[in-house]
Image (tube, rainbow, N blue to C red):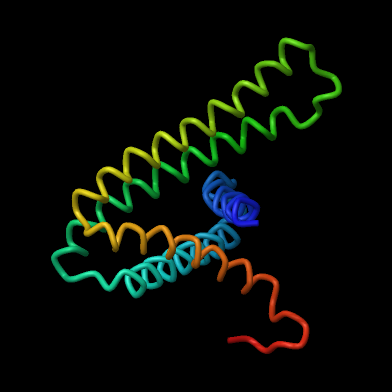
Length: 160
């Protein structure tokens, strides 16, 4: 379920990042999308900050590294999403093209895992291990919250 949630968030963030390529005639719409993306980023930062209870010194060292990781991850997700979109009509592709698509899917997952491993090691150098684990929990919790906010309250329950 969490992987499915991460995919939804990845698609949402990818779409928001792609909005910057719209033509000038769509300037008002682009501005609204960029504003929404900035609001989302502000919420993410506030959520993670609250969940990790970072000291001022930890925050000073952590946020530049985390933002670097987050930016690289978003770019990677957009790239992989675009590759998948290019191969949407698989019925008309050759065996060789299908093999390339399948291999690229695995390579994309490996690249994401490699990026995660690289920054995991960096996070362990700058934060206590408890806060590294809390970071991963906070990322999942924020993604869950985004999905719940998008769906509205469950039947029989109000919003929290």
